[in-house]
Length: 96
Image 1: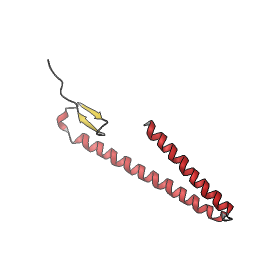
Image 2: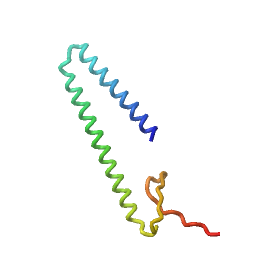
Image 3: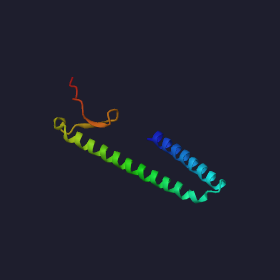
Image 4: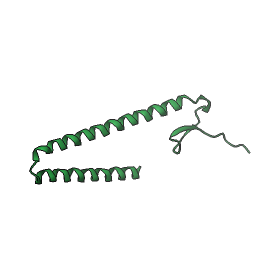
């Protein structure tokens, strides 16, 4: 989780540097009137990113819900397997 946050933070800083460079270029070449299109692009990219994130989260939620309903043989003994990113039946207990 922390690594994903750090990667997202790094990508955000990188994107802001690119936008800043473009805005400085436009101002130094006398084309400040085009800066609004840069901001339209930033807004569109943010909206698209949010939309894709929400769609993927909804898809993952539906997948988890379906996998829980699909295994009635577990008798309520379930655990979450991080490797497979889905719930699994608990293994049977060993009796000695």
